[in-house]
Amino acid sequence: MAAAIKGDKRAFTRHDRRWDANADDIAAFLAGANPNWPEDDVRDLLAQHLSLTKGEAVARLQQDWAADVAAFDDIFTEILTMADALTDGIVAQFPESFGADDRTPQRPDGNEHGGARAQRRTRFHSSLTLK
Image 1 (tube, helix red, strand yellow):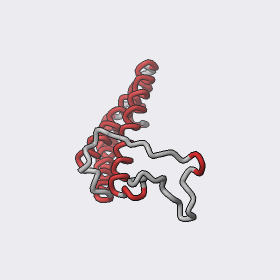
Image 2 (cartoon, helix red, strand yellow):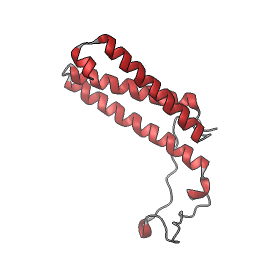
Image 3 (cartoon, helix red, strand yellow):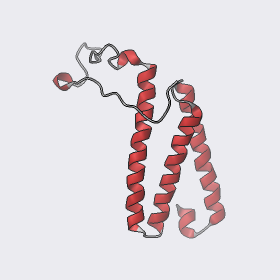
Image 4 (cartoon, one colour):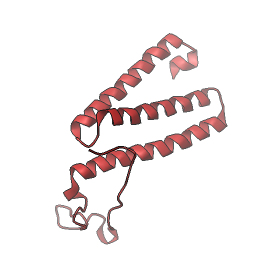
């Protein structure tokens, strides 16, 4: 942000490339941690998040408050999609921990997660294709 505020295009480009490379590293890490998160799909989700976040930053720097709010709304929707995709991958990797047999998961002490308020788990379906 500091480089963008100063108008230092060279520094901004350098930091922007580091940001993208970090997203690539995160995608590779997550794909290695869970076989249900294909690296290209995770990279696409992260790239979309970065693109939307950059758009929000530009709107804010330009004091375009309507665009800033619209960008925030887009980011909010997108991050929920990403959360659903990551959740789907965890549930697919560990189905026995998420009520695959329609039982509420148990804590080690034998009590239900969420106590008396525990409900059946919601099944999320994201745009991320699980393999």
